[in-house]
Image (cartoon, rainbow, N blue to C red; front, top):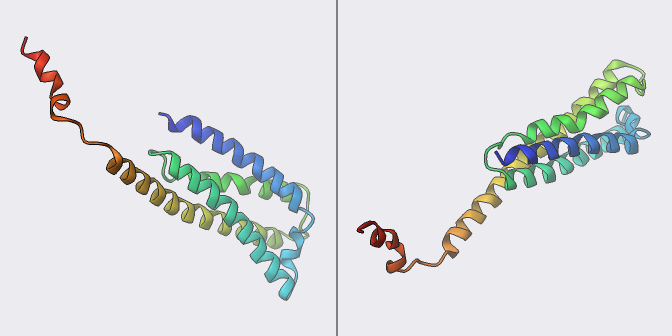
Length: 153
């Protein structure tokens, strides 16, 4: 059950990060819908930004917990939730299709980052467990069977 407090901490961090990211990027989000190179550059920028943040959060979460392996997908959804809600509430985009494009781009980046982060975190955790299993010294024979000495009484 030690995964639940960590899951709660990561979900609250994800919501906080989502709000902070939206506040800092709300003035440049409309550039995603610009035609030509500008729209492509900003779309890739947002995709890579959300991918990077979710990659590091997911990698850390997968490395630290054993039971909730797919939980970083929920974290990814919680990071984009404030951006999706706040952009619709503030009327940042003129048309609904512009907002859908924005949400789809950050959703793709978030889910891809979570997927890659889970894979990398599990790989790091597996290497750590193998290293610790190999680093344990051999237990001497007299200590290995110490409980048998006392059970004969």
